[in-house]
Structure formats: C-alpha cells, structure tokens
Picture 1 (cartoon, rainbow, N blue to C red):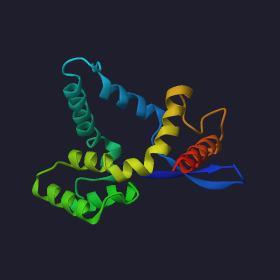
Picture 2: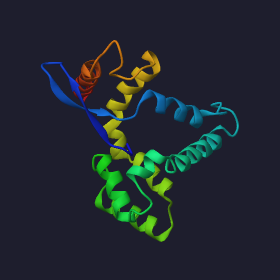
Picture 3: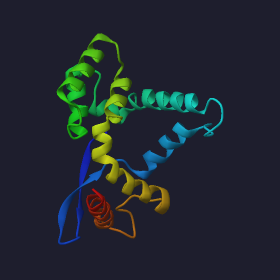
Length: 172
C-alpha cells in the first residue's frame, strides 16, 4: 500500500495492462514472520504481543531506505499523507486526510502511526481485500510471486482475481 501498485501484463482475453501489487514474496514473508513472532493465539498476552510486533515492524518500515526514497523526511505532513493516500487509491475521506495531516504536523502521530492509519483504513481494506487474498494465495500456497515461473506475466493472477470479483458480485 505504501508504494501503490505497479502495471503488469496479462494475456487473458487479449494482451492488456493490469494493476498489480508491488510487494514481493521476499519482502512479505520476513515482515509477516516478524509480526507473528512469539504470538500464540488464545494464550494470555497474545493480543498485546501481536500489537507490539505490529508497532515495531511499522516503526522499522518507515526507516527503510526504500521507504525513505519514496517518502523523504523533507516531505511536509501534507505531502506525506497525500502521497500515501494517492498510493492507497484515495481511500481517505477529506476529513480523515486533514486529521492525519494535523496529527503529523502537531506531533500527535508519528509517520509510522500515520502509515498504519492509512493501511488499516476500512475503505482501503474493502477495496484491496480481493487483490490481497489472491496475492497471499500465491505467496502462501505456491510460495512464489504471481509472475514467477512457470508464469511469465500476471495472466494467472488476473484470472483468479477476476473469478473472485465475479463470485463476490454474484453474492451481493
């Protein structure tokens, strides 16, 4: 979400561009392992440990060179929030955006907290849940990126995303 989407290609129904996730398996796995480290669901303290792990990861994430290249410290609070929001497909309402800019400007929230607020926005969750589900199937079951061999593009990813979207529409 922080970096937005990339454009891949699919040949399903003829060659065409397709909006695809930027996150790759080699980035996803270590981050999810860090979040879950030591967490045993239903054990006392599991919820707090999970929350602590999330806070630690996001604090480290905003210090990574890749993040700082896209979001240099020199950005204003408004530029930071607006870029995050644009990369999230405009998930924030104007009032949510304004509140995050105010919180970041005043120091009430850190860049990590603002990033997490955008990442956990319910509108973003709703918009990205199908894409995230298909991507995690590639990561979790196939243990590869959607365009890794034996695929050469995102045709399979696009196919399964289309099926999921079609099924969801039929249920509504």
